[in-house]
Image: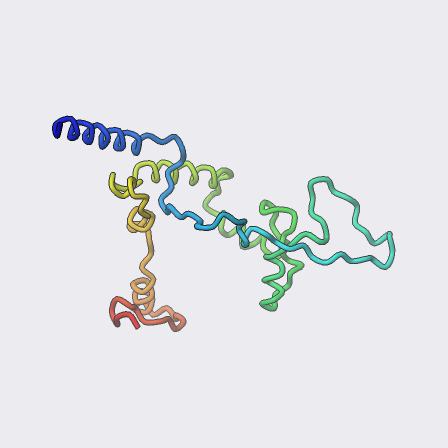
Length: 184
């Protein structure tokens, strides 16, 4: 009887191992799950209050698929709250460049620019995540492997700060390195 139970246990373990390996969805390295069944409160953006213009001729012409005057503009609102000019924020899309930013963008593109860089990086990152999705037990128990997978690509901010200071570059003050001075 004990032999039958051990064979069933081995078969069950083998079945679990095979089902843990096969997945068609994109590999997720963070494994973050919501513990509530309610809506995501951060996904809701309240609209701006309705305003009545002084004259009906002051209304902009309708643009199908465009933005409305009462649509939320969190980026422009943040710029205004920090003392900037929210009128310089591009509301029509990320592809258009503002009047004052053309020279900066041209300087950044001086060595060439790829029009599909986002798609290229997304494909390369997907391939990287497929290759680095963690060890068997990490996948089986849905442990986060994000930080260990991308550790070689991360920047040590305190080491870079020390390097810049050795080179004589003026740097702002920064909190001390917790690895050197201990956690506080």
